[in-house]
View 1: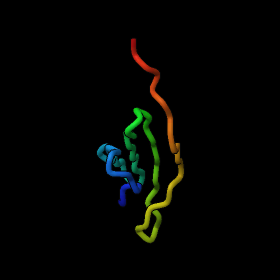
View 2 (view 1 turned 180 degrees about the vertical axis):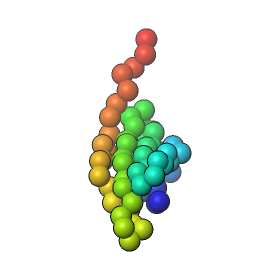
View 3 (view 1 turned 90 degrees about the vertical axis):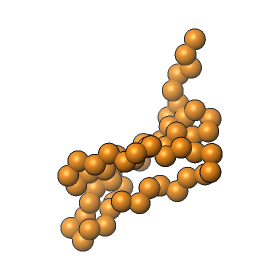
View 4 (view 1 turned 60 degrees about the horizontal axis):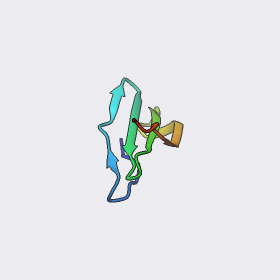
Length: 61
């Protein structure tokens, strides 16, 4: 499973796998996070099935 391309200041989080599914995420330098889900294909390659390119975490007070 290849991690998504990131910029040097981004922080990829560990990939979580369960069977034929994998969840990847990255914390961006501005505090937002990405999340992606991939499914292993019969030929062994991975295909993205969900791609949330960016969501922000509400600031804490």
